[in-house]
Length: 260
Image (cartoon, rainbow, N blue to C red):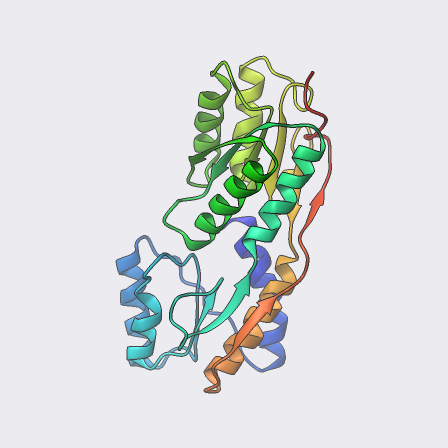
């Protein structure tokens, strides 16, 4: 359970409690197990609605929920307009992070992303590449899996190249921690030789050495909005809500001017 989903659930809980509802959380090991759980919940009438997260292109879950008569909310949006959704502007947040780093003089930026099959990863991919191209800077993205080990290996690969990046953006805090470790093993100082920017604020980010600069969104507020959309969907209403809280870059000691 990473910091994003913990914050999301913390934001959902008070809204649902006020409506006399509660969260049922089930951890599953595969997409097929998730579909089995959805069918079981629908057939037994165990839940009044579900939140679908980490959507992929042509995701089958919205259609499955509709066939099961299960109210659903697609977190981040989906292609199925008949499914309620909460929309999140990942592209604007990524552009903000790029603007921060290029404003510090960085012209060679790397990125360690989440899994490329996810819709929100692709939104960030496109915004990262387009924004850097518009600013005349170079970009490179390596796919990660949100683990510290993958963050370490991807970063080590980038730093071994002659044209290594002077700043790297990570799609979560755990991969950024791996990046800090790879920089130390390569004999590089953060932020003197390499700036590190993580995604979503957390205690892990604040306690890192050095503390991580982050692209931060109000995930707690997003949770509350998601809960309101879920209650509306469970009542039979089709809603498309927009999480319009502005992202921000919180600067700590892991980002600094580009090395000369």
